[in-house]
Figure 1 (tube, rainbow, N blue to C red):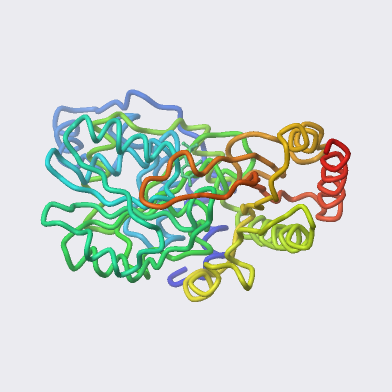
Figure 2 (figure 1 turned 90 degrees about the vertical axis):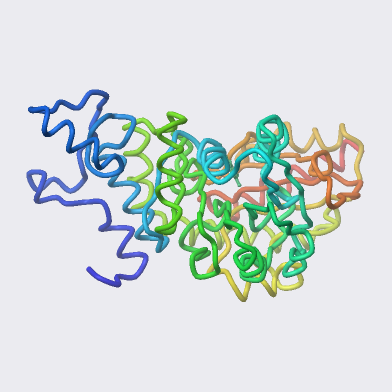
Length: 391
Ligand SMILES: *Cc1c(COP(=O)(O)O)cnc(C)c1O
């Protein structure tokens, strides 16, 4: 249906049951070699390298189904899927940089993205400058004639600063730079990057799109202008996703809307409860009134997902570990976006260069899963009891 609402797109995109025996879900194509009946057919396929099926790495009906669904949902031209979120990030950054270029990257960026910029792009003669995520239109003074990319991530990894995406994108575009954004936290449902001037929206689909902690997947949704450079670079780098993981991501998307609403609701309940605790100095959650990013979040976002942080008052490490080592429901581990709740001690200060993180208390990142929030609160309450007993 033309102009369907996002929840409808989630259910119907990338499916064509009557082309497949009436079966509701699309088949999974396990594929490397694609056979051509004639030299003519082989040559024709090579003339259209980004359409149709010519080799497993270049795209299959399974990857196209997932990519078309994400692109339709987010309002981009086309998407390119890759085997992890980080692979999507590094592929896109590679596509838009060359030796001698200057790129501007938010200081609140996901850690491995920062390391790719400094260690890999740096070794190939691309200079990365990190900027204050709250710079807004002030980014104008950092732009140079050779600035080719401005990279955003909002809210920021670990510290949840909300960026003024339209202001940054407008200035960057006027200067001829390509605007890239990691939109993993909000998903296409809660932030519409193409309405705010972004050229390529990147997702760690590993998180909410897959949604069940059982596959790694990345996707870059592109404007028409940016699609070929990204797809071409993905091909050259050999960045592609496996068929079963693509299927899991597509399946995850069918329930994205209902899951995300529940993640949002539970995260706000937990955040409010934590904010009232004596152990907590402050909660970092842009969806809450009073958060420094709340006004921008309210202006630009359509919702808040389940990931946020709590800054605790300083405690000795054994008291912190007494809390975290024995949680019953909250698991401790990297990644997020699955159905389960997670808790993680983080250290954002380590990787900052343009801004500082001077807080002395521990910063705890939480992911509100789909459990009953009452039980999650009981788990946290017992954790605080253990913390106090260890003081
Ligand atoms: C997890 C994450 C990534 C990387 O995704 P992977 O699939 O783990 O490679 C990128 N950006 C953000 C914001 C993330 O949280």
